Amino acid sequence: MDLNNRLKELNKLPEDKAVKASIYEHIHHKKRNGLTLWQESFLLLTIATIALFLILIPQNLSPPQTADQSIQAIYKHFGGKEGKFFARSSSLYISIKKVEDTIVYSFFEDLTQYVEKADGKLGNHIADVVVVKDYREERYQISDAGMLNVDSGQFFVGNSDMYDEVFQTLYSVETIPWIFILPLIVVAVNIFSMYYYKRHNLEGSKPFRRIWWLLVLVLAMLSSVFAWATWVGPLYKPLMVMFAFLYGFIIWHNLKREVQTYSIYKVETIKISIISATLFLIIMLY
Image (cartoon, rainbow, N blue to C red; front, side, top):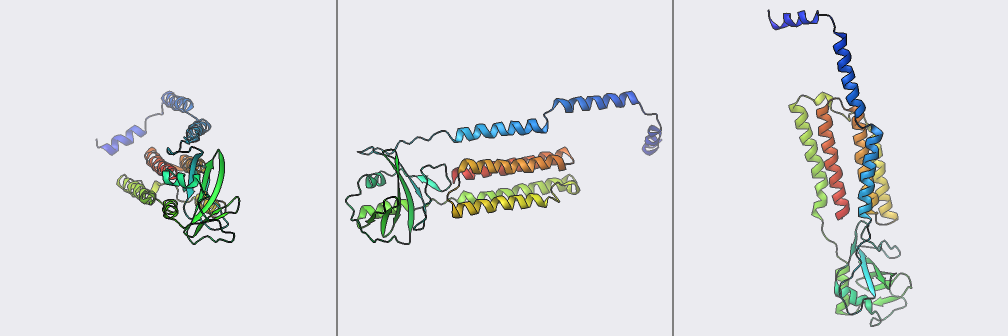
């Protein structure tokens, strides 16, 4: 008897309801013992909260060793515009860097050597600077033509070699070539998933084919980020980290509803994890 005939004979056998009920009970029991969606969400939220707590631990404000220790820290924000001040007294903001140059510290210890000018104008190249001196913040905008004390309105003319050196140090930006890693990572993981689906004949079962609302949500988040950075100031890194994990959680949560096979769930979860981890690293290192 060939295989097809044997299968036909097997299909004619009566259904064993006891075995069927046992299998159903076994599956139901295993499912009940697993974590529910709310439990998984609470676990992810707990992990994110612990991570944010570790990020928010106060930073070490010990400055470079100088003769006078009245300055606790100096922070800079590359680029600026007269009348708009974006620097913050913490490197937990994107594009805010803590200055570690002893010459810059010595320069801000004593500004009396620089001539004040009542109607001075800043140049075209401006950097915002926050000096934490005697545990109080002093805000400055330094340019190639002179420096403005934002709080008092005093203007200092830059007419010395030391001033030029300090300006060059503060008006500098670290090139970050690895910031372009994100699009490369996204392309790489999508190529990998496409190859995997094609190899295992799962192309017709891919999730996320009709989720236009997710695209709208992502575009709204990106628009909010750019608007804040343009009109308010530097973005707070822990908040951005929270958004990055929230983005990953939203996609993962929708994946659980749309996925049809475990293989697809595994591949898409790996993709989400890699992209979220890359976003986290870029945010913290920027």
